[in-house]
Image 1 (cartoon, helix red, strand yellow):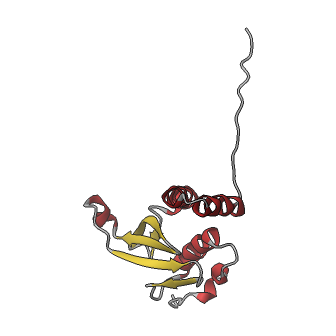
Image 2 (image 1 turned 90 degrees about the vertical axis):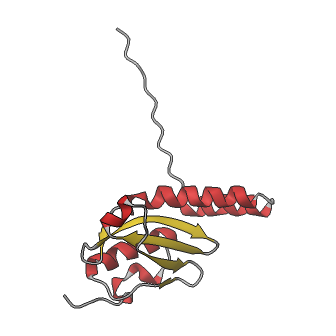
Image 3 (image 1 turned 135 degrees about the vertical axis):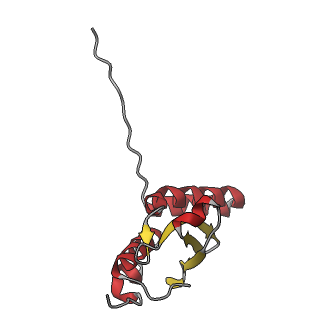
Length: 137
């Protein structure tokens, strides 16, 4: 018997390369195409955070949507997901490096939002969880 040679490739693109290629598409007039690739890479990079419990395990994250220089983060109770209802949203403004729509939270939720910000913007100020308003437990 002849052993089968299986070639497996691991493709991991740096965020700089992704951003440069998307910007090149937009510069060439392929704006919608660039937006679709932005959303694709956002979904790929952040899919591990979907269904993660946040805010003392009362809510879960449903998804992420990129609009211009802002990421909308949808979350709500697990029951709302069954009926395709979004309970709440918060926004992360990439250029401003600022979350909007987040109230006080526990440390676990702050760590999750910190990781999300670091994936979107590696030089974020939110790499330290003390930038979030944390509730004393």
